[in-house]
Length: 481
Image (tube, rainbow, N blue to C red; front, side, top):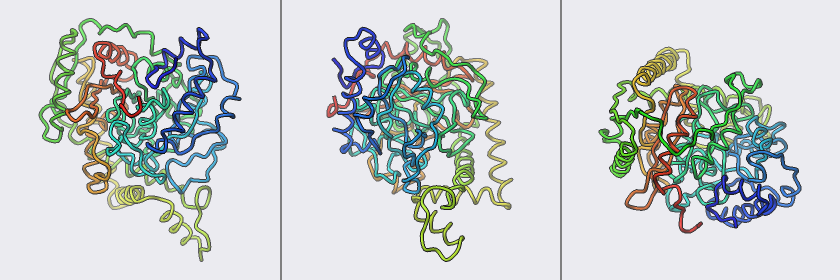
């Protein structure tokens, strides 16, 4: 019997033993998505069930197991709007490489997940299609920008979903929704066919309820892609092979001191994080406390890099080639201005303006070039740290899920919530975020393991071992269980 809490692993077993059919699995989740989407607003579009049931599925690890792709990931013949009304009528002429990889693994996408417009936001409130709600508390945000992907998995509407991350947009919603989320080594997963925000940090990543499920989906996504110039020449990986349920012998875990000492970290987050540290120590890990002096500059330089690259990437959306075009304009200049003004939301316009400022002739060296210099300093700091420790841990988000509307009142506070997720993105290092427990108000708290380049296998092994010692991942929002 399928339930909202059924894992991918359990579905694999039931399908292999022919206890259920792919059609039953697809219909079950399609029905739940249709039933609860009006409440959560997690999907921009839900595909026709009869067409889904008629598709020929490939044999593979995801055979007959449905999921969602974020709205900025191209699916051939489908609208790909990136949460923006500017692209509301844009139909993708090809599929993203990861969409193809997942389909070849037997997976089937049953809709398009809601998101912050062009992946700009940490709350899920900046979509042109309305805000996504958090299944754990409808009055709170699910995190962003992969808000729809996270909310749909947390509510048991699909067993997996794919988000994209530039500075925390998979892991932060994972933390806010009690899920597992991965940011891979930069270049591990192809970016081809994903609408770009910040090309030097963008990476897709899976959201699931368990570590093993996440490893299954990530394995299907991995592999070298010649159509992506940033793709690493690494073969497809099986990230499930080391899920022994045990920590590696002599594991050295570095704890970021900032996570326990900073006034910017919520007290409830600190409490749950301390419990996670104690648990790891009890499991046999050797705990060391680590200070990375330049880490405090991570948010500042990400602010510059992200805005600069966003302004550059979004310059193509001017009404002349694709997307929304302003009508009845007197000249080309007016068409550009009106198309962008009417098509982009306020957060996108804000970031483009900042990006153009730091890229301007008078400020490029002072801001953008200097930010890249500090990026290299942080990368070197990490490299030095990993000579003495195996992994680094911190809270995923410095805050609990915050109330709807708070981000509009204080955008800077929303940006600062990414304090622990941004540094690895700007250095291209892999991190997995997992559930750590719950605050006294019942809202989820997550923490994360970071490793050196191409250490995803190790991260999955450690995260899976920790997960087996706890039941946080088994908990579901009562309204949707």
